[in-house]
Length: 294
Image (tube, rainbow, N blue to C red; front, side):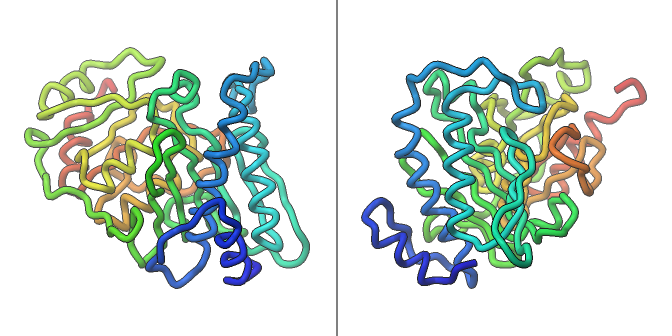
């Protein structure tokens, strides 16, 4: 990393300022400035035609996806002397010289369909891990989940130091029972099995957002009590950053059986997850979902 001098120079450029952040490292501040600059950059791309290509996962690439990916890559290469970028849109790329310090797992636009329709449910998601660490939620050191359509501060987290939006420390809700819980559930490209229907019928309220990172951000902030995705379609870049925020806010992120997610082999590996305000609520959700035919 190029030090606090780089961060101060960036902030003095007049493009974006960030509040004084309660983190020992300047990495969260560097990520926060990236968010502000990227939102400005994407304004010029919102009406451009799509290239008609698909990424490694088979998802359609839009012009703003590629623009965001390129801007994030260029920014990180200027901010850090050497690292590894693992992006949904461009795969793995090493940059810089010398010893690799960090691995950045990036979803440039999580919720691309929402962004294309100007629905305010799309985010830049970045998880920062040690360069040689396994791709596991337990290894994430810093993270950012940053709304791309609404003008609000990003969610920033650092392991052992909490999760914040601006100067406000985030805390998950105190709801510990499904019958009292507002939950979100991803249903895209999916025929819900009976067990999921049972879960939704037992919750106090159900919402669908179509953006995993922001849904987990809502869990971290206490706005909703759990997020459930049992489609076995979810990939790492969509939830890795937000998982640290949930954990640092007092919640947990587990698989649909209630176990830790463990390490992933890459962005092509798919999973399901439960993010909840507490381990007790996550366990109840997992128990409702658990059956021999699911």
